[in-house]
Image 1 (tube, helix red, strand yellow):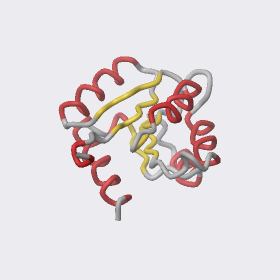
Image 2 (cartoon, rainbow, N blue to C red; image 1 turned 90 degrees about the vertical axis):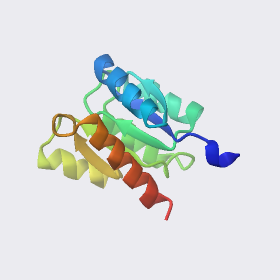
Image 3 (cartoon, rainbow, N blue to C red; image 1 turned 180 degrees about the horizontal axis):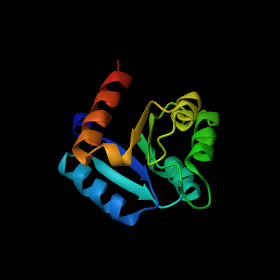
Image 4 (cartoon, rainbow, N blue to C red; image 1 turned 30 degrees about the horizontal axis):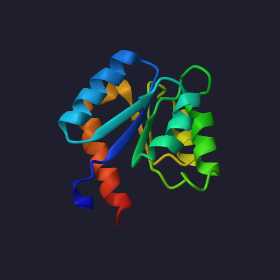
Length: 130
């Protein structure tokens, strides 16, 4: 029975068009998707929804993605949830900072099609189960 449980993705992203696009793509791939439009709401939803993986934008209102990532990694209850940064910030320093703060992936929105993001998520989830 537990095998039928859908993998839940929390998408923390302030661009409603992207949220809709990714939600549609992930649901077509059999994932369950919940979303939050700012970092503060995203942190609240992590506790409430207990996602399997988090896709996190960096530039957002109320609380940026780096602050959200810091808060997640400091909280023992949710620190093990894999976080992929999905952002338009592509500077080496930002990428380095994301990994140093505990992200397992860093995807630049402009460089990846939604299907490639799905593949990346599947790969990371497979690796985290080993």
